[in-house]
Amino acid sequence: MPALFEVSVKLVVRRGREILLLRRPSDTGDWFWDLPGGRLDAGEDIDTALTRELREEIGYHGDPPAQRRLLEAGLWHAKVLLYYEISILLEKVALSAEHGGFVWISPATAGRLEVLGGARIEPELRKLFCVL
Image: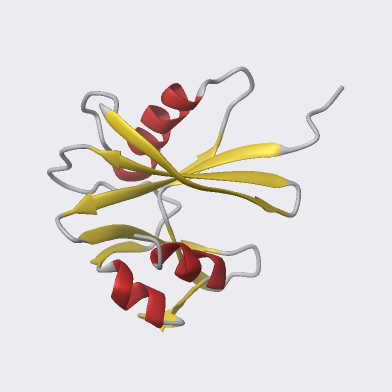
């Protein structure tokens, strides 16, 4: 029997007071800003998914996050989204081919913007920035 919901993790990666946003294309070809992350593979636990997504999305090859905090859980279409704030030492960002850039930005600034650098910031993400 197929799963009723797809589960994805989204990662709030901090550098001081700023957070990391990745620029990615939508299904319609326009661009939007998002947090690093992605869906869990079949049978994968949260810690393994967090570590894998960090490696795939931003090129992080360090230790698994020592600390993580669930900020929010939500349902979007048939997808469960789990937003985690994590602590890692990230020396440089090495984007995967699916991304078109990145930015370090304060949550307060990102929460007020609808568009940044020609790409939109989704309302759901801007709401999350209010709790950071």
